[in-house]
Structure formats: structure tokens, C-alpha cells
Length: 445
Image (tube, rainbow, N blue to C red):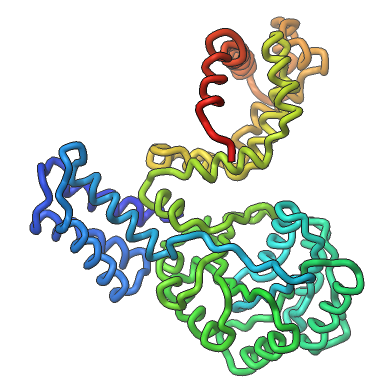
């Protein structure tokens, strides 16, 4: 995500490194590189020019404190301007009515149907909503079936009228069905075209008029770059939508749409799709995205993802087991499963400040734990529960069962023993006291 832009911006900041103060000359050189970086990321020339003009004005108006280096100050200025460019604040969706009705619009291939299911899953798990997905795309072959398959995956009912070719009637009937059957959320998936055309615009406008949605979300493929911004403007002129959803932001995208769409349509980006899985959907936080673009990580999102998988009762049980030196490979497997639920391992590590650049050329796939899991699954339950019984002959058998060599098995058992010791230190003695002090010093939200 934004790797090319991050690299170019990093090079522009290096121009100021070694300078004791900010001058018009070195700022101009740095700003020129920033403008090039933005244009290369598919930001329009006008927006890139206006952005760098603001950065230059802000930089030349600053008196650099002794504790702040010119390069660091420029990073701060660019961060603040990026945050403003992307909207400044995170904006929630409107779910006041019952049922709340959300209309999903966008071109064909933008990911509307998949996003509709992801949104239903998100609002079901995060807000406790009883959702109804509506199959309003009556043109694309298999569109209804696709939504039904996705609905089944996330445990959400799908309303469809397969013989009815009127999206307006289907949407209106679906809202009535939701009201009659205790659903408090209706998400209407609509048809798209390969390009903006008059017929599609008339149809989506008629659906809007028929169901009077609380929220209209425009879904756009981030990989289409500046074209996405132009399409968003055309839809907004007609629908006056409430927010933008950027899909495929985890792909090979330059990021121009994410950076500039807010300034063109004056509507916030509300969600970003970051993968194929049904839980691969994030709220869009301009500040956090600016952090990630500038290689500062995104520790807040990382903590939030961890908290989603955190079970307080399970954590208490685990702490007792660690304190009694009873932590075993079954417990270790549970921890791995929780980490995997949080998302792509490389993306998670990239949220740690400083790790993004370090991992740039490192290939970490979703199967990063595959070898470890294979070794553990090749153990008997007795061996997992009591690692002390793992003698030489058992290790050889485990290696054969996991399709690996005994050195890998030995390495895992050694790492497991060292990790167990470290975890015990953190739950007893000085480590425990330190953790208590940290908890006491922080405020819970």
C-alpha cells in the first residue's frame, strides 16, 4: 500500500538532512521532489501543485526549534497536509433509522457486491445489526448467486426476486420485508456498468427516490487511480452520496484516488477494502493513513485489531498457565490462530513504526505460520500438552509427519522454550510489577 509514494517522499525529506536550518533554496528542492512523488502516485498536477505550495508556505513560516531538525519538521508538515487532503477526521456512517437503509453504488468491477457483504458482516459484528442484503443487480450474470454465497459466508440473509427485472420494485419490496421481519439494516447492492451512462444513472436515481436511503456509499476501485476520482464526481453530481469506499487498496495501487477524492467531491472516504476475506474491511482514518504513507506505521489500528481477537477470560486462564509453567503447544496454536485472524502478517508487521521500510523487500505470505503449524499438528496430544517428553525419536517422527527436517523441529522447540521463559518473567516478579505500573499509569477508554 503506497510503497512507491512512501519511497519517493522519503527521498524528498533526505534533501533536508544535514542542513542546520530551513532555507528557501533547500525547501524548494525538497518540495519539487514531493510534487514529483504525488504526480507519480496519480495525483492530478493541480492538486499536487496546490499541496506543495501549502507545504512550502508552512515550512518557510516555521522557526525550527533546536530540538527539531529541518527534515523532521518537513515530515510533520507533510503529514498534517496529507491528513487535511484526505479529509482530516474519520467519518462514521448514518444508522439512525430502523431499518437503516444503505444504498451501494459504483461501476461494474469496482467490488460493490463483495463490499456489501463485508459491510453487512462488519455492522453485524461491530454494531450488532440484524442485516438484510438485497440483490439489486438484475443484469450481471451470477450477481444474485454471488451475493447469496457471500451472504451465507457471513451469516446474513439475502433478499432476491430472481424473476423480477425492476431494481426499483426489488429495493422497495426488500425494505418492506426487512420492516416486517425485524431487520434493522438493509444494504442494497445495485447494478453497475463498465462506464458511466445515462441509463444506469437514471436507474440508480430511481432506486434512491424509491427507498430514500439513510446513507449512499460510492464504491470505487483504488487501482483505477485518477479515473476513480472522475467517476466519483459524475456519481456525486447525480446522487449527492454520503461517502466513498475504496476497494483493492492492498493491491498494486499508486494511491492517487485515496489522496485526492475528498478534495474533488468533498465527501469523506468512510471505508477501505484491504483484502479478499470478509473481515478485510477497515474504517478510513486520514491521520493513520498519513502515518502509513510516511512510514510511521499504524500502531493504533494494530492494537484495535488485537483487541478484536482478545478474550479477557481466556487471557486470565493463559496468564495462570504461564505463571505455573504450564504453557504448552496447544496454547501456542491458539495464539497463532488469533494472530492469523487479525489479517495479513506482512501488513500487520508494517503497522509497527519503522517496520514498513525494513520489510519492503521481504516476502511474507499469509502462510507464514504454515511450517510451525505443520510441526505442532504432527505431535500427539500428549506431546503438545507436555513438551518435556519430546525426545530424539519423537522429534524424528514429528519431522517426517510435518514434511520437514529434525533441525526445524529442534529450532521450534528451542524457540518455544525461550518464549515460555520470557512470558513467565513477564507474569511473575519484576515483570508483573512493571505491567501493573503500566496499567495503573494508563487510562482506559
